[in-house]
Image: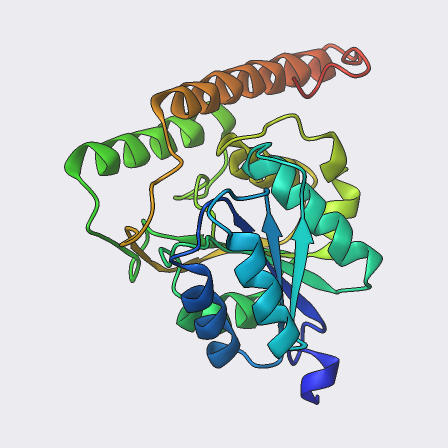
Amino acid sequence: MSEAEGYPGVGRVLVVIPTYNEADNIRMITGRVRAAVPAIDILVADDNSPDGTGGIADELALADDHIFVLHRAGKEGLGAAYKAGFAWAKDKGYDAVVEMDADGSHAPEELPLLLDALKDHDAVLGTRYIAGGSVHNWPAHRLVLSRGGNIYIRMALGMPFRDATGGYRAYRMPVLDAINVDTIASTGYSFQVELAWRSYRNGFRMTEVPITFTEREHGVSKMSGNIFKEQLLRVTVWGVQARRDGLLRMLGRKSRPGSTWP
């Protein structure tokens, strides 16, 4: 398959990179992605960054016809940026999308691992917490929160994944269509959990591959205590609803329309 046709066994792939005040990182991350997998395209979804990230992205797009920029009106959250990026990918006829952070915490050099796994799966989750995965330069409390949160998610939702909160992933476009991604209510990091949860509940072929996560060197992390609380609250609600629906099925009844997703 030629570069113009995309990644072998997958097709045309778009890496969606949401940005907000990532002027120190955007040149670095796009350059590494382009060097790692020249056959893919990049969409920078910028939330009107005050530091000029969008303008830098425009310069990069002018110099490289594999880079595109989606200018958004303002900061609306990670989930909203990804939904806009997914809609752009669908409109342009891509076969698969990849989620990737702008700060270098996700190694573009590991992107072939995700795409190779996508040849035989519908969705691939990059995972820090399986053999071969690792976390670097994180403070102990962040690591404890992340590991503990993922243990709780597995218990509450019954998903087998070791890292349902990670943001380095690849999805085939039919998955996003089937799970009706436009209706996802989560806007923060719980967006990642909801994507995985809906994909899992719909029976898609999913797998995890090990990744190396490295804390950003430049800029400020968007994670906060409120985001973490939102994530746990939503997971609890989904878990309760799943058990309720299972019980109703056992009793031969149907769940209330529109009540599945908060």
